[in-house]
Image 1: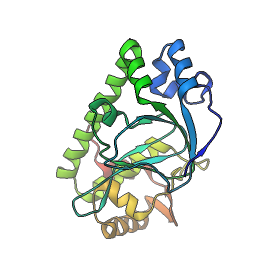
Image 2 (image 1 turned 60 degrees about the horizontal axis):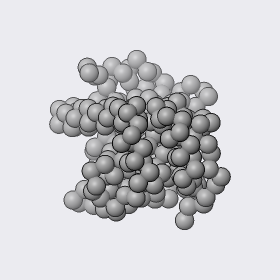
Image 3 (image 1 turned 90 degrees about the horizontal axis):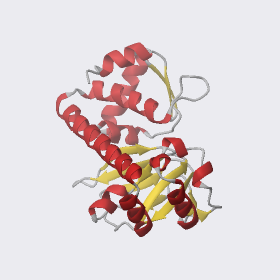
Image 4 (image 1 turned 135 degrees about the horizontal axis):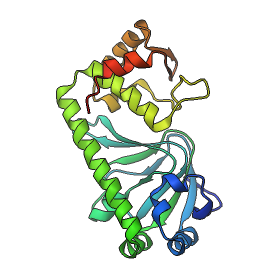
Length: 236
């Protein structure tokens, strides 16, 4: 069960200017601050389940979240990684459908919940916020189309290198400038790449042998960025 904590003001949130709410008018930010409910979710805790109905949107105050979809064979497929400042649950809310993915905390995370009626009401009257919402949806669609193309056309080795770059872009690096700032299991990495866990383990070992990365438990250090970028074969 999530633990509630004092609602931080949207106006003074450290991630305000990387969030959709950076475009909201001040009066609407005040309404959100007053109405939202903020909670802390422990690592591994589920925020919402695939198949459930949405009752609002979630804004990440701090932490890291994965959105995963369960395939026909029951295997997990990670469809999105979420960081502080991002929102989630909005697609199901806007389409008035059930969640198509499960949200799980990758580490202890503080998350604010904005009720459905308030969010939709503000979205209808705040043109800047509506435009930002359309921009986010368009960006997500483009990324989904690109991922489908890469799954169909790219070898697994290239997709793994691209996934490492994607994780770096999403969560950044630790103070040493090399270690990915998130701990993912080999299975989670495989689910991001879209391959079997055994294949991900084998390729990570190959990357290590080639001097591109260093592995220490769930820690992954990126040692040879030019070679990782070359291996990813990025052309978009």
